[in-house]
Length: 546
Image (tube, rainbow, N blue to C red; front, side, top):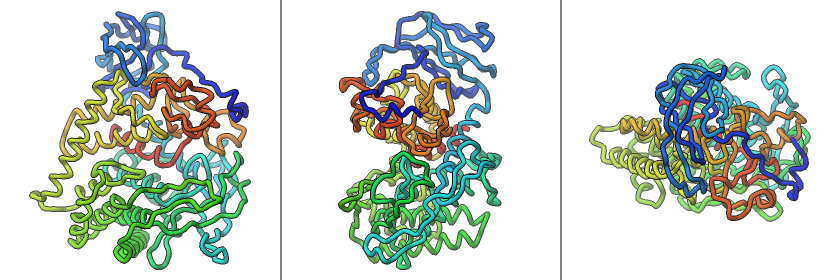
């Protein structure tokens, strides 16, 4: 990683050498394959790796795309189904390499899932499993309780949340839930997926999620309350995790943390029962204890960083969707109608029923309810299915009016916009599963195509995949390890029209179209950071498409 990126005056954009934009991971043979070109050209060809033309056609004029500022033409080569490695050519310009094949998502699913192993905290990353990215154990010391520093807790474990070394309950619960639902709904995508991690006697993805769940269990108090986070008081400098030896602090309970904890442990209990009944029972008891705590504390207990702390706050305005998710998961696990009544009461409050977190987790609760056994005439189930159908239809309209096929409005180009892109992919996937909408499969694929290079900058937003890809991620170990190539499988935050840090502001003019408000800068946390809950919806969508 280049240390000049920590001088904002040196911040600069690296432009793609390619003029035609494609999904650099590739396409499965049966899916639509459309390249985008922001220039005039009537004809295009597709050439194989030997330079031989295998397909030719006419481009189609799309028109002006407001989000990118481009006047766009498209090249449809969907009829090309032969497996191979290709480039698109038109108007003297070319695309990055891409592949057509039935297994094009395999490496990407591996990389984005294996990324969680590299983010493990509290243990050694052994060369056997981590290769060049190995490091010593980190953050193993006891943490002091913020309210009473004389009390210390063992909260080692879990995943580093993002570019920093903090661990946050709400963020971790949502990321784990995305991964758990990916496995629950698409087990065939994972049953043969070997992540080259220590064996856990179950599918590797469940072994990895268990590492986070075991840390979450440590964050629960005896009375069922759950601490909001464990971090240092200030973000660490850009050092290796084992060199971050500043005292750790466990911060107070929040009702969002309790609810999200209850939800994800209930969800996990039902899944792990097949592989480890005793662990499943531990998860159930923990979930029940925290749901009981919610009942005893009906008031919203939020969280704000205390004075002197600058690590992630993860505050929310209310806990309405969080409690809804918790009750829905407990209903799905136990079938107890008591929880069904609580679900109905929560649904009368103001929150989205189809959002998949972080911050809004109503979609996870709705999914839990719909996957539970219920009467076919259940009006609540019909309402939830219709809500997903309506959400998908709104997203389709956004996708159709975007030259790059992206289902994002201008307000969506904020910090972590790629999370929104992949959450929208989840909505399409769930709409297909619940309502049988075939078109939603292609719309879900469109969101992945954007992430992997069919965007106005022609960049793959996943490290390790694509000829032109992110590599200078805002990720402390990736900067400090001295290795030029970033840890693979990390999803960058992506374009952010807010330009919320000085490095983004130095690199990008304020009048830049929102889809182009991005630079691959290690110092820019508002553009190029990673988080566990930006990776997890990508894993879900990949598992669905695979």
